[in-house]
Image (tube, rainbow, N blue to C red):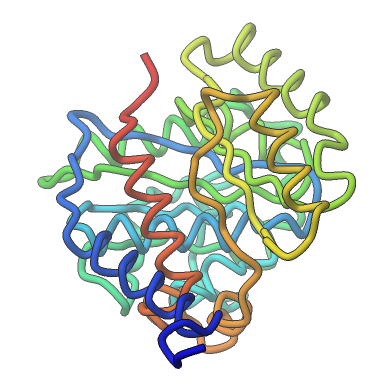
Length: 292
């Protein structure tokens, strides 16, 4: 066996080919802002990782992208390198207070076309405070619509990162969005709770936001060496053939490492398999366009 015919050599050659393909892509920009909520009430499915890396991938391909961090843990804010200490004015002040998004938005140091509305720990109490507020389900949408209307440049994509629950923060995200992206990990119990999530999305669509649709399902934490991962991928594609992206996000040390450096994997290691996979997924999302 020659050195060029080893499994490692074949893997490196494939990564090189994929990298060249994504770098040569010209992605279409949407005619109007696509507002996408990334949701799954199961924790640990790659929700925040997917949010920040798709946002960074689209920004790298020429789009103007805004990420709204609605998770009190603030992990999306961390990965995008923006300030989110307790005293930072944040999305909490927008939803519960009277702050405007323009007052709290920060540009990510990794890209001139990537912005973030950060989350702070104060968001942990927002669920209780929202209960008594007028139009409590509409507060994020009202603020986002006002922000987009006053900008002197287009925002092509807005990604909203949700907490792993179905409370008022997630409802605000669903009401503000037109699309839902659901990350599903290629592991046992992957589809557990999905019917409940889809049922809640259906209720939001019926009563609060008739434009809401599940547009995209992304398979994450894929390990091609296991039969289970392939079985889960096949099962998800069987149930959701139109929504499921062809791209699979692999289990990757680089993806896991990047947040500890306050970076997305796109910025941390743009030539890694994980980075290329998110660039490919971003390309699919861009080419699909908004759902009819």
